[in-house]
Image 1: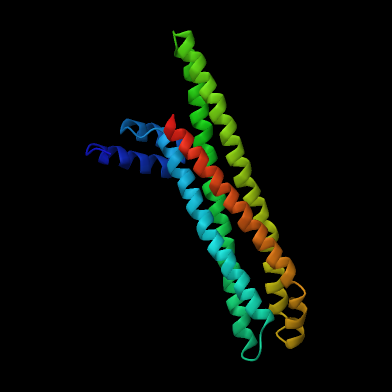
Image 2 (image 1 turned 90 degrees about the horizontal axis):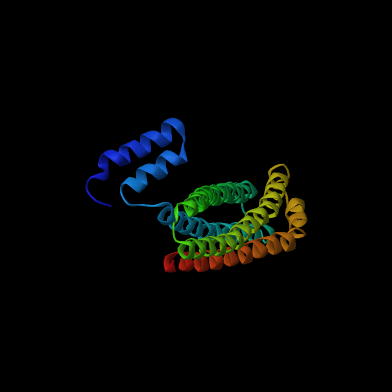
Length: 217
């Protein structure tokens, strides 16, 4: 960005906080040469980062759950607190992923609306046709990306549900029998976390492919 955007960036921040209007943000950013396509790429990369960080968090939660079921002496309350911390961190990671996906979809919708509206401004039939073809192809690829991200989002719920159930159970049953009961849940937790990580990997690959297409024009 150039040096002139300080005042504009202030307007961006003020506009977003005062009215929560994404269009205000987009307009201000375009004033400094940062268009919706650029914002979309940035937000997809941020969604990727959230998913990568989420993978690490859910793996950590799985490892903590394994340590619980393999508990062999010590303070059970401390074990519970550690598992509860992992659950709460996982909830935060899930919320961040969902938030990033919503931000991606918001700017993508704005970009496609703008692109579609601008088709009517062409006087060249050939250029209009080519732009329309690229728009449809980009929308098709974006649909694949969004579906992959939504699939990831949905696969988070079973993980959080199982973690929450087992954390609550342990909270009210701090004894060896409770630990024994949780062993029966390990297979489910492991399966859900692995499925989630696989879906995240697929979404990240779709993101890379979509960003590459956008940059190629």
